[in-house]
Image (cartoon, rainbow over all chains, first blue to last red; front, side, top):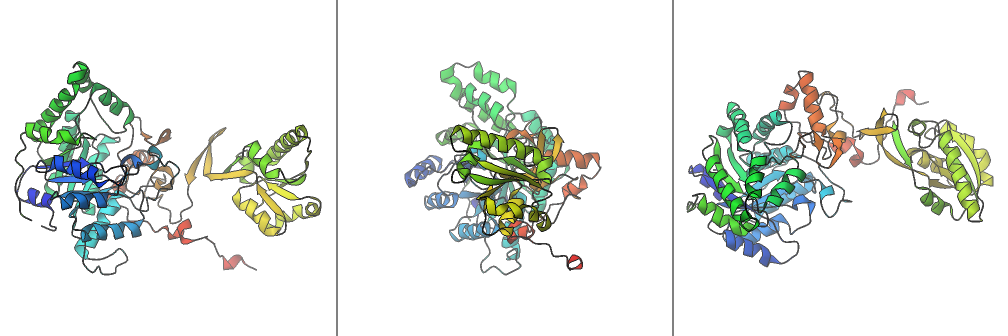
Length: 309
Length: 223
């Protein structure tokens, strides 16, 4: 164990891990995040808190994580390189660890043109792979990139994302290997709807032996409606929703589509659990956090293990 | 070459409001090639400005001149004879040229008639596109001759991100091909995919604008 992360401990003890995601409020009201935390308590091992996802301004991930931590949940800070240069990243890494946070997810971040401030200057001083490497160096070598010693290295469990469905497909397992080289320890994938293609991806991952070096968590997102499925397929790059999934949603009466979406999600989790090299599931119920307990329960993932860290 | 685009006519007219005698200065360099600030554009812009001002009842006298290059001190001398008789210079060179005119003639008002856009190429007639951000410390030998800084919307050194569309475009805009998809394709065709397998380290941006305004000193060429 390199950190005090509950997620790392869950993996260490050989459990199939469950994480979810929580979007901070578009305002300073802490009750929003606490309410979401209350819904999730006991149903997951750790909760990601997004960092201004889709480039829309929200409460800081670190601040929201601390609120969840105070409630006894185990947060994972998401950190994008879009808005911070390496000075600011290092400082926030130390800050997150100093506040008692134990895990971090390294991302480049959605381009700012998607959000409310398309006129903003982006940073991208470093990319997500370089961020992984930066944290690994700070934690394991106790050094800043400058070579100077860190007085109290940040003990963070290092995660990253992976999109098995974006072009160019054949490079995606290799890009994952690059993240492993950089020092990543767990991966949460993009939402999986095309299970066949995901299994092809995992074949390649296993050939590279990556599943033995890191913990790979399969990402799932319950569809709320046939409309949402069509919208995501059309508008979200690297989102692969097969026509048969859309058809299953569309063939369901409107008022039952949400339940159907959950059913599909639960089916996917049960199938993904059987895939060799999958160590957990990451449930991204976008602004639908209240459904996470139901999904986790129906997928047979309760109770969550008690671990001591 | 350095690309530029003329500012909208109403913006230029706005800047010229206080004046009735100006020099309109083009440049035979890059902006001629990209059809934004050469002799021909000087002629067309001058006519448009005269017409617009005549219709306002406030005629504008324009001295048209196109210099060999506005970024070279010796060519800037060509404008000196006119300066006493005119109130301002409207330059349609790139930002470097415009500033060099201002530097050369410190007591003359110099106005920008052109927005400098990027360092790029002529993809075909009427279509220019960015290729270089002049960041220094070039890595093109590792990336199949395609620049991750200029061609990837996020300037990732270890791309592609998850935002490549099924037809190989960037999620930011379907007009933009995914820079990393191009790099991968090209490395594959060159049998150099092993270049991709190695992580590129954090770049030093000191050689870019981030290190402050840049200079090149070549003592061997100085007199």
